[in-house]
Picture (tube, one colour):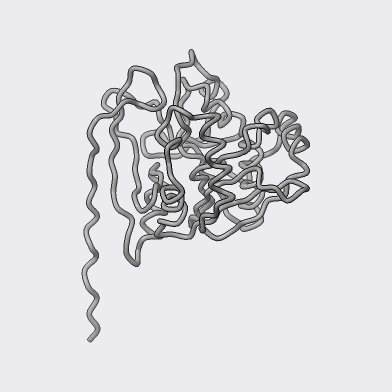
Length: 255
């Protein structure tokens, strides 16, 4: 008779209140749990479908009292189509070549990451990250993770995206790019690349993290139609009215 050890209980903890990185004057709290052990990938899949995000070996979700501005959003790959504006983004970045690389930090990636942080988020915590901090962000992962590298015709690294492979899709964990290319919308281009890659792999979704209607810096996520948001524990299609940005508030770094 074989013996199967009982499943390890999953513990969840709530963080102390901190200033909200997305909405001025608000505070945030998160529920967090560790992703470890032989069931890490299955646990991560379940948590992702429930609206959690991953950082290192921790999954987290906002639980801010009196606020539900952070809404999990994903793209249904099979229903997605490229509109005129997104076709312009593809054309503007046609010279770039993307490839999946192992979750291994390189000096070249870190230098680009630093330039991005200094230009876009110079007053944020990530702007002070050392190479070892960056390496931990990339390599400290309990699941299948890769770094998408995008290079120009001279083989220069100009954009990157830390990406998780889920059972039902790809999850864009964090992206960065050469600030000089900002007008070409490389962040949007990387999402389009991920959508096509998910289609090639037969995966139904691309997870974009959280969307905040009041945040200008989240506006790009509303460009991808159709999309699905998690409301009351159920994923449902969005409509044009709710995806229209409301009166914007100052926001910090992207999730």
